[in-house]
Figure 1: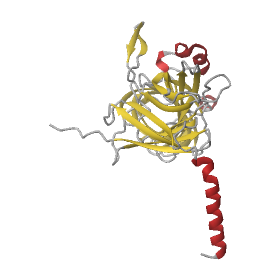
Figure 2: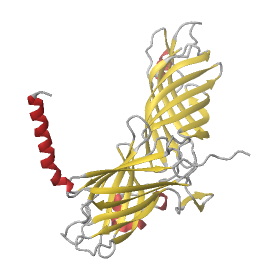
Figure 3: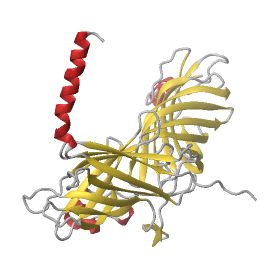
Figure 4: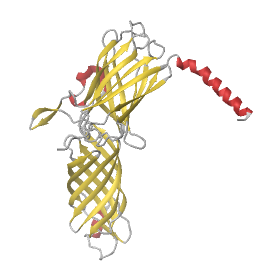
Length: 158
Length: 261
């Protein structure tokens, strides 16, 4: 997976896919000064399993890997036969991230897929000031087992 | 009311009166029946629906050309394991039901049709299968396969598309119904009655576990978690070859409340 990308300080410049190049150009990934805003290019993959469902809401839990690693929770709410909204929580070392998004949803035999955008609205700990919008958010649900793979990419500021 | 308004009103009334006979003579009435089996809040269920069509004038009803069945709000289409495989229409047409994987089956039913030269007692199309088709515009597609026998020798495939509601989850299943020829180049038959189910009842699916083929019963759509006052309302809009349409409504009563010990 794509690795980290602390890309700039104070200015939002990062986009998904540029994280490696920018980090390589810098030669190393440096920790920014305390309290300074930084932009992180996220490229996350999560593998989750269903923990519960209630009506049209699916609760999934699993592990996220990529730019950051941690435990990921997704609450999918199927608001129409072809639209879902999602709340995503990622718990990682030193903090957490919370985002929400909306995606189209389609069933195709044994799988269902969703694709849309997500915003990161808040965080905690080291990510207390996290925010970002327009992140790409997609995934596939295995309908028989309920397992989900999800992909999240884009940039956020902290 | 001013004179010009009165003239406009009279003209409009005359226009309506002149138009009425063109459709009134061929007006159809439809009775809709629906069910949840089991009827239990939040539980996997099989949806049953059927309709009977009659001509107000007493003759044969006009052939049906379209159906839009609006489903109650809150049905869970998400956790169902119905339709784990896709049936390709070309395979269905070429090989019948055998051309499609068992895991694409969604339900089945039958229909009673009448040919224009018939006795009036109707002829049964004993086999109607509902299968999961390739999605269209992101919507779930239900393929209907009707296998007609004497005197209506026809294998007919048509599809319904599950379309989301505008303000809620009360999606609707919309289908354009092809005309069913009575004989080659003959007039189409009229559908008198149809019964069908969508759900796991009497369906067997297969999966592979540890290299073995294992049969299981799929999970159906789930009945809503709560029941609105008055019950679960289904409505259906039917269109006919003569240009008329009819609306029918059916209510599945709320299940009795669970007794607490």
